[in-house]
Image 1 (cartoon, rainbow, N blue to C red):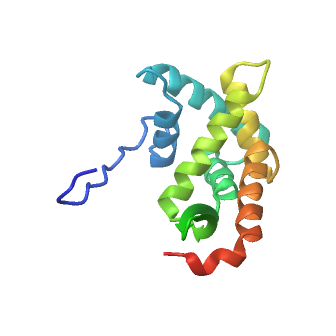
Image 2 (tube, helix red, strand yellow):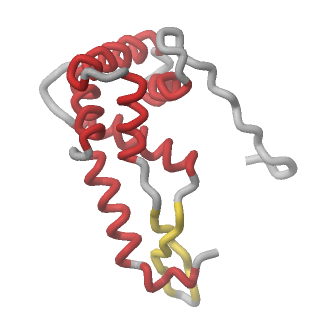
Length: 156
């Protein structure tokens, strides 16, 4: 992080096929070791499978899946007088979006047995329907924030 000025947010260009910034960010999060063509083929294959399964526009289904997976609350550690408290705070929209993408990709990588595009499509379908590992992760985050609501006065 720079000491003087605030770092500028870079604008992500939309992807080639769907002209969507969200799909472009999914590709960039999915990419490993700079292999963008591989990430694009996985994402586009998953989007086609998503379209077949949900019979909706794939970009709209992806947006709905990400919206369902986005957390609203999280806990942050705050040290007060020698004790560390888990303080619940609201999640900014950009961080919520990136957490949702990260959780979707990690839970699809954790699935076993099939090709990556099929695992990603299955995880997106589960998130679209409001179930699956990603949604469970979001609910666990919300439960933890709710359980530590007593420490909300330590918010900064």
